[in-house]
Amino acid sequence: MVALLRALLAALVAVAAAATAARAPIPQQITWLYSKSLAKGAAFLGETLQLDEVSNLVQKDTFRIFRAGGGRFVGVCDSREPPACAGDPEEPANPGKETYTLIVSSKAEVDAWHAFLLPGNGTTVRVTAPGESAKFACYAFNFYDLDWQEGLGCYRWEVQYCLDPTWPQGKIGASPSPPLLSPSFPPLLR
Image (cartoon, rainbow, N blue to C red):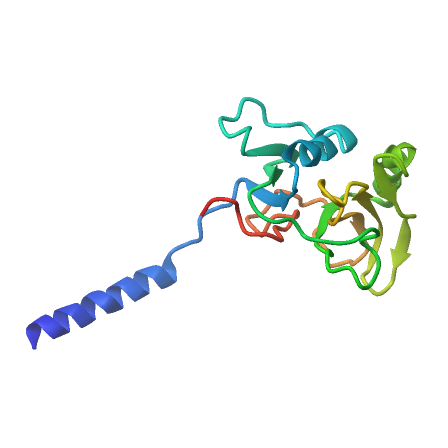
């Protein structure tokens, strides 16, 4: 009976300690994207989007990681089957609708991203027109890698400025809240 009471007391102490423990901060975050060709997925991130690659990684033959801003990264690998789509990923019948959203600080920055990508429209990237959405309270546009067979073409990329007055504008990286570049996929390694 004494042993049972001690075990019960130990369990209650453990539960109480867990309930009062603070969550550890999240100083960095990686969102993983999957491509049939590691080289083509990495080229879209590094050449088309001009994201800086983390250099000299030991695993460079397995995956590639690029800086998205602050402590946020986007990685590409070919270790899992990427989303599938046939042709235009915006067609309602296509299942490949994962979205990777880049949050910027103003409508002017949305327009600047659009102007940056527009010269490659039709050759390396497909770019939609920026516009305001009352339903989603944002000003945004979408873009896609044109290589939907081996690259990252079945992902929807979005550049967005949030018009919702409750969005934490200007507080990027200032709190331990979830990262702005939300992970849509589980990490490569668990």
